[in-house]
Length: 169
Image (cartoon, rainbow, N blue to C red; front, side, top):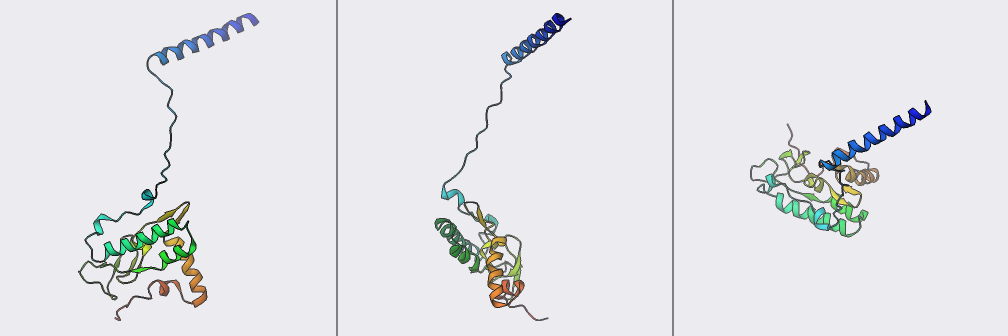
């Protein structure tokens, strides 16, 4: 009985080896290990403009301003002072696309926030300025704004729209 069991196990192992050899010889190959490429060039981190907005008055100049602040942030090893400059920079874009940039005209920014045309921020035209593991976006900038609000006792909506003139109804 013990002998039969050993022969049975050897037969299964042998059948398995034949099976593997047969499929290996028919072109079934082991999957090649995948490799990941890490891009370290600063050019790959440079924000790119939204092509749909290039013809809108104010967009190209505003985008370039913010892109330059982003590059400066990256060159300064993600320093909080350059991050604050990026977050605090205000730009103007013709959101209503009527050819006139006005404090009283409002609209949606290229990234979807509603504000007036003369008080956009860099996070309204660049989805995220990447530096290492850090990303400057609206959430990261809110941290700076909240710190400033503690010192000035203002609320966030007033702070973010303080450069806008809201027409009275």
